[in-house]
Each structure stands twice: as structure tokens, then as C-alpha cells.
Image (cartoon, rainbow, N blue to C red; front, side, top):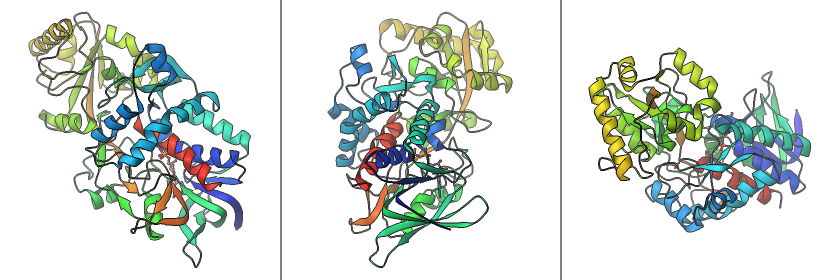
Length: 455
Ligand code: ADP
């Protein structure tokens, strides 16, 4: 079968939805291809938090921030491997992207709470209602349906079609029944197919460290198809060995723990000996490596009720909480002693650690690990203790794009008709992506891609 649209978008995650909507709004006819039966990708299962500088919530909270600081934190967080010009584009446009989500797409963000993920100098991560990407994806999908973008699920893009001049003019795909469908694109193709965290072979190809010993937090559809497809059409890739683990994941499934976002409100990490070993707001790679270096290669996250009450992560992620409790991976205890005993930690050692934390909380300075947000008092129970391991979470590497999201070849020239946005690209996050920067990336560049392709 053959179908013709102005724009073909591959991948229905945050980047694909944003791109499709913008292209449609600019007057193009748009089809969005998703290989899985349902939409959302990694965006859906993420915490959905989005960094931006000088937002309305920062103003509500009296937090001073700037585009410069956001860009600086992002670059430094990636060991200065990201492209400074592209990071600048992100930092400059993320605020408008967040306002677009709020005003146009009607995404509800909390008005009075922000996260300060590791590596950020200030609190700048907007939190969507429900603290997951579901709020974003549900609303994006609703608007896209209303706008008349055609969505094809169970439709896997296999190959880019190029004409004699090398211009990308369409996509060859496989439909639900194994049938081949050719989608012609009058204006261009946008690749928004996500990263390759779920593709162990591809992980090993670029960085042997990230083999089968790691589970993944990622959606099953993130297998790097978009990268491979574009490479076949001559695209360059960069930073492919930069693979990120998320430090606090479910030891049974590899899935990210959102209940454990209490870490951003003051929860601490201890090892089997009941001792802290890392600053809890360090970069993900540092914490992950720190955890793997502990006995057994796991850690426990510990917090008390007053920390739990700040972000209410248990209430907002009640299903996850119940599952963790049922699987014996999280325990609520009235006393610290009971919390320690549940995981066979020496109660005295844990008590000594918490006493020290309380001292540092009072002094306003963490002499052991220099906790950047300041430790919180944990003298009062009840306590929560949760077992956690790192798991592959984000692939920083990918396609090389320019400021208008054109995909570049090895010579740095744009491949005509080909655009990309989101985790499939590799120029922003360098060695390490900071928390809250994936959503900022996918929405910001997804929008730019959609606007550009429709021109
Ligand atoms: P981003 O955060 O960059 O938007 P996501 O992981 O949220 O990335 O979304 C990427 C989406 O692309 C996923 O839903 C995934 O299933 C889909 N996808 C991956 N490969 C293909 C393909 N070959 N054809 C169609 N969709 C794909």
C-alpha cells in the first residue's frame, strides 16, 4: 500500500507528538508512526519532570535562575561533551516549550513544587500532575487527535526512502499484519524513535560495559531503530558510548522507582553496613557507580515521614509502593531498628548514620558528602527503607542535528528532508544527562522539528 502526507513522523513519544502537532499546526498533513500497540515510549513511563529557567513556578517560589545557568549546568553535567550551541538552544527555548505545554496542551504542572535533580544549581524541574509522563502523553495525544494528525500504531518504520539526489522522501514500514506500507513524505521525515536502552546488543556494540548484567528502565520500543535507519541514509552519530544508568531502580524488574523520588526531598542512601557512601544529589553516573561498588552491588534508600510528606511520592505512586512492599523491596517501620532489621542491617550502625545526618541537618552542612540541598532531620519515624539497584536509563548518544534539527552527515552537511528530535539525537547531554533534561529536550526540539519541516 502507498500513502502520501506532507510529513511523516517516526515514534510516538514526547518528541514525536510535539513534532507532529507543530507540523500540523503549521498547515501540513501529518502521519505519526508507532511500532508498539500503544503510544508514549520512555516519555510516558518517565517521571515527566521538565527543566526550564525562569518559569512561572520558579517565580511563585522566589527562585532565581537564568538561561545561562541552566546551559552551564547542563554542559557541565555532561562533562562538557555536549554541543554548547545546541545546549544553548535547549536552555533558551525550554521555557516557551513548558508554557506551550501548560497553555496550549493544557498540561497541569504543580504550581508550588519543583525538583532539584542532581547536577542542577537550583530547583528548576516542573512536575506534572501525577508525577509521571502520563499527564503529558495523555494531553498531547488528545490535542493531536483533535488537530487531525493521523496516528498509526503497530506500524514499524523499517527504512528511509531517498530519491536520486539523496533527499529523504518517505518511509517504508511494516503494518500490523506484516504488510509493507510506503509512506511518501512531500516535505520531510522526522525521526523521533527514541534511544537504544532496550537493545542489549546495540549497547554492547558501543559500550561493552552495559551488557546483560544491567536491566533497563526503558520502554520496550527503544531499540535504536531510528539511529540505524538514519545511518543507512548517511547520517553521522556521536557520543554513542555514553549510556546512563538510573541509580535507584527495582532490583527485580529494573524499572525506575518514582516512589524513591523522595531522594530529591532529603532521603539518604546507605549500604548493607548502614553507611552512607555518596552525596544523594550527585550525578546519576556517580551514584550508580557508587552503588555498584558497595557490597552486593545494591543500596538502600532511607527516609522518614516528614520527608515523605514533602513530595508525597508514596501517595502519587501508590501502585508502585504497594508492589514494592508486596515484593519485600520496601518496608515501612515505626522505628529505625525495625527498618534496619528488615534488611539485616546492623541497627546500631544505621542509628549512628542517622544521628550524624540529624547533626548535619541541624548544622546546615553535611561534613561527610556535602549534600547540596542540605540534609533533613530524620529523628522522628515512621521510616521507609527501600532496596535499589542501577539500571540502564538513557542513551545520550545518537544522531547529529543542527539548530533547526536537520540531520547531518559525516561531513556536517544536512541530509535533505531528514529531521530528528529527542533521545534519538546525541548532541545535548554529553557523557551524562541531568534529570529533567530529557523532557526539556524532547519537547523543545520536537517542536522545532515540526515547525521546520512544515516550512
Ligand atoms: P523521546 O523521548 O525521544 O520522544 P520515546 O522513547 O518517548 O522517545 O518515544 C520513542 C517512540 O518511538 C517509542 O514509542 C518507540 O516505540 C517508537 N519507535 C521506536 N522505533 C520505531 C520504529 N522503527 N517505528 C515506529 N516507532 C518506533
